[in-house]
Length: 127
Image 1 (cartoon, rainbow, N blue to C red):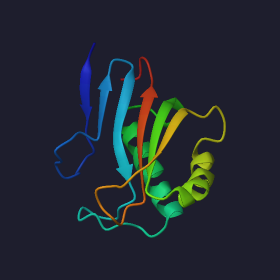
Image 2: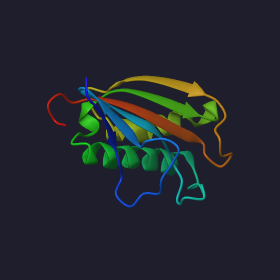
Image 3: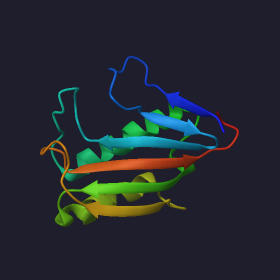
Image 4: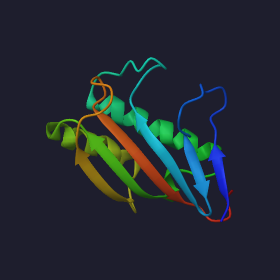
């Protein structure tokens, strides 16, 4: 099995990789709704959810993949009351043949973040 780090051009170095291609799978690190490297968060669950999904889409594109290749997501939200609003946005990015998903209510590292989403994509022969 091959293993390749997916890097984002001009992104600051982090203690983790944005994504890893392992064989035919791409594992995208948790994406959050921040506006800068200092962790300043966008206001609201809808906008943060959009940012998570847009970030993942960009990373997958760099890896030669797309959201249509996503087979599993894990959504972390800080308030169960935000579930319906998050779900409304999420569904617009996955209008049909949606990936498997887990949703967990928990705290996040930055108190201003209200959602984080991890992605696993399957894309054989695209690497």
